[in-house]
Length: 197
Length: 229
Image (cartoon, rainbow over all chains, first blue to last red; front, side, top):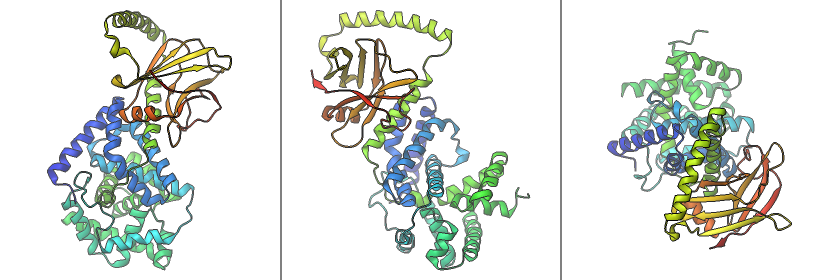
């Protein structure tokens, strides 16, 4: 399911090599990076943007900015894949803010569903493509389990589906102010738990 | 504003990563990010904590044309970066060109003919039948050559851009056309496979430096069929 720590380390090292080569303008390195990461990034963008055309536009923008700014990657920004995912997510969130989507609540509630089953929507055998270790996955899930239902759902809807406070409030049928405090309390306990782990 | 080192700072960083800071609050936060290393590391920590959720989504392969489009864009940016500079550049270029000419003469003379032969060719002509460019595809070197047969400058402030018309989907950018001489563009193995099945080639008028969108934005002025050679 997830990558072993050794596989993950190899993969991250390879990605860092590629980013370094891209920073020097090597087009072949960009092509290899594209092959390695674009399916995962596209999945992230589709989940947030819900529309294929928007997700394509976001992926193109995000990867062009990787081509231009690969030199700005440093380990302080996290694992290379985390950095790449963040570039994509912020790009998608920008697009959402500009062209406020017509929200259909159904797809957002998937977040709830795959929280329950935890692993639905996962690749069957993602060993070759996974960029996350079991330990990391488990740490996050263990700590999420300590939050209450509403805190957990609010945080997941925001991160995975890019929902605003208002959208979360609508989908959980609660006032916006309440959602804001669920998120804050949830973040507080999540951080405490993850740092203690 | 007392953000530094506070609990509020952690929370704001978390909300920022979740995408929940909007409007003025977000702008203020991004301004602070510029000057606060501790805030940046707080953001990176949150990004790392949540990344597992992004990374366990089942991967979805994006459509193929996205890769071609991106390749066209970065190739153009790479070319622009190494493009014309000051007078020193031209002096260096003149020397390089002389050497290149010598190398070309030598290779033309000594390379076995089989290695030189392109797989496919296309002759681009104007409405009167005057040949303008000879385009040849060299799969073994993963490149295409565009040889200007007759000098044909684009309209002022514009560029001619070459497109492949794949058997399905959008045109794929192949590079800017040269006014004189021969220019080579490197192409990926995937692109070569599509070239072999392509419906043809087209040349459009684009803003100087090429289409900003990765798709043709100006009129298509020439088309040509690819013929196996």
